[in-house]
Each structure stands twice: as structure tokens, then as C-alpha cells.
Amino acid sequence: MSEKKAVSAEALSAGYGHRAVVSGLDISVIPGEVLTLIGPNGAGKSTVLRTIAAQLEPVSGTVYVGGSSLDEMKPQELARRLSVMLTDRINSERMTCRDVVSTGRYPYTGRLGILSADDRAKVDEAMELVSVTHLADTDLSCISDGQRQCVMLARALAQEPEVLVLDEPTSFLDISNKLRLLTLIRRLAAERNIAVIQSLHELDLAQKFSDSLLCIKEGEAKYQGTPEEIFTGSRIAELYGIDSGSYEPLYGAAEPQRTEGEPEVFVIGGGGTGIPVYRALQRRGVPFAAGVIHENDLDHPAAKALAAELITEKAFEPIGMAALSKAEAVMRKCRKVICCPEAFGTMNSGNRKLLRLAEELGILEYAEGSRHD
Image 1 (cartoon, rainbow, N blue to C red):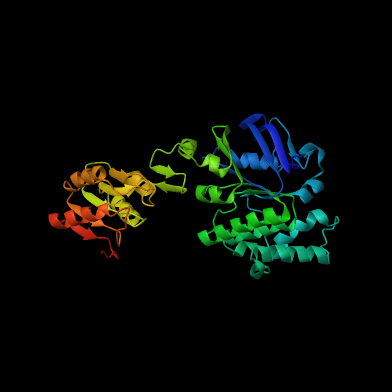
Image 2: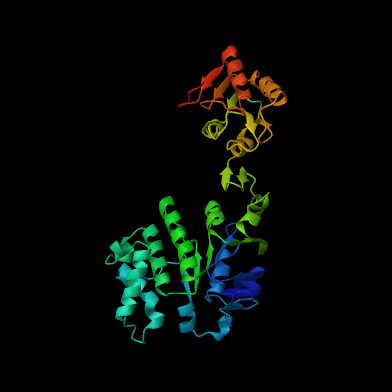
């Protein structure tokens, strides 16, 4: 038997009035799952989230939460089942952070909005989960944007929702807090069986913290699937129309455009040691060659993206004479050789020959901090 869907929609069109911004979306999220919307700026991700959260009427189609359509649900019932953290700023004049988080309990209080002891305990628990307890008595207007994000997440969690809708929850956060917040969301989804629907701009984080992704471009769902299905081949480059650099989906890494031209510097890399040198040369606008790099080497994606010329060897094979001969020919035309590895092993021992040739030519330099056998 298939698991009950927390949120679903078929042929959903989202927009404003009768004008659709995004059309033909099929959405299905089960409890405990994290669905992330990605796509270019202006693609309509926020519009879709607002429609799921009942802040916008669907242009066409119906959104279901736990099997009930949004049209059938009273506002208080929806507020108990679905909570939202959007990018809008709330009017928080003279409200402490605890006051703001406490509003997440209003769907459970009477008309007077008086919190019970249990409600106050839920507020304290939500603030502790997001590590904002120390801000409890601070005016919301006196904290940073990043801290505000955390307070608003605590407010959403205080509602004890079945569905959590988050629009760019990592905006304004430093990398440490991005990781902490997404780890928390991931853990809460699993432990409390919450279905999470969010949008993210950080592709590397979307790849690592999502169960499924919905890729929106030019008013439609371009791709939909697991991270392993989406982050493959040229899909991300096509989704964002990347033409000023490249994107390596396996590592979730964006690289700037390579400097074209006849290589002036030859870099002997391997094992990740060449990556800082590749990027330093690219920043200075120096065309360079890299080699001999195995196709499964940590250096390979960056070298492929940034080197004007790349000499490779097949994965798991010792560096052969064909690759060495090609590398030597390119090296002889360069004014400088930079050697990055500290030592050479069995598979890349051929690169030691390149090192000796560079010494003979009098053009060898060692990368900072490297030592050699």
C-alpha cells in the first residue's frame, strides 16, 4: 500500500489572478520527505510555495494537504497542519523574539490568544531547537537578518505542523548556520514525520539535503526527481543557462570561465593538490596546461573546467607513454612548470619524469608547502 501523501497537486498552475506564472506542476510529498524547488531567479518558486501555503489562489488545479483540498479546510485547521516561513518581513514593532515565536501557537489557543503552560513549553522547545533561546527577550527589530530567519523558523516549528513550507530558509545565514539549520530541518522531517517543501538557491546544499527536487524554468517543471537524477550530465547547466563558466554536478561546484590561449604554465597536479594553483592562475588570467591527471582524480573536474589544455590518463591505469609524450610536448612550450604533489605513487609515477624534465629545462617551481621525493 502506498504511503499517504502529505501534500499533493496535479496539473497545478500558480500565479496572480488569472495569469499563470508556472503551469502544469505535479507535486507529491509524503511525510518525512524534503522536496526542494530550484531554478533561476524569477522562475516562480516563491509563487508556487505561496500557492501551496494558501496565500495565493491556484490559477488552475487543486492543492491537497493530507487528502483534503485547501478549499475545504478552515484557516485554523490549515494553520494546525501547515506552517510557513516566507521571505516577507512581519510587522514586529515592540515584539520580542519570544512574542513572535508565540504567535505560532495561536491556532491552538482560544479567541483571546492566551497561551497555556503547554503552549509556553512548546514555544520554549522550538526556540531551543533553533538555538535562539538567548534572544527570547530581545526586540525582533534589534537582531540580525540571520537571527531573524532562525526566529521565524522557531515560530513555524511551534505550530507543530505536518507540512513545513520554507522560502529560501538559508538566506542571510553564514555557512555554519546554513548547515546547522538544514541539518535540523532534515532531522525534524525524519523524527517528526514532517513533510518539508522549500526553495534554495545554494545548489550544493539542495543536492545534499533533499530527497527530491522540482526544477522550475520558464513557467514549467523542467525536471523532477532525486538528487542523483537531477545532478547529472548537463541538466543543471541547462536549467540555469550557464554560459559564463561551468558547473560540475558530481561535486556541486561552479567554476569560472577558463582563460583561453596557448598555455604559458604547465601544472603537475594530482590528488587535489593542483586545484588551488589552477584557480590562482585563472584569476590572474594566465592560460595553463594541466597533466597528467587521471580521469578519476580529485583534480580532474577543476582542471577540466579551468585548464586551456588538459592531458589525462584513464582511471586506475598507470600513466602511459602516450600521455607522457603529449605532456612533454606541451611542457616544452611553457615558460614555467609548477609541481604540486608532495610525492608520486605507483599510478602517477610517470609524472616524476615530467618533474625531472622541468628541472633540466630550468623552468621548475614547487607549489607552496609541497616537498618531493
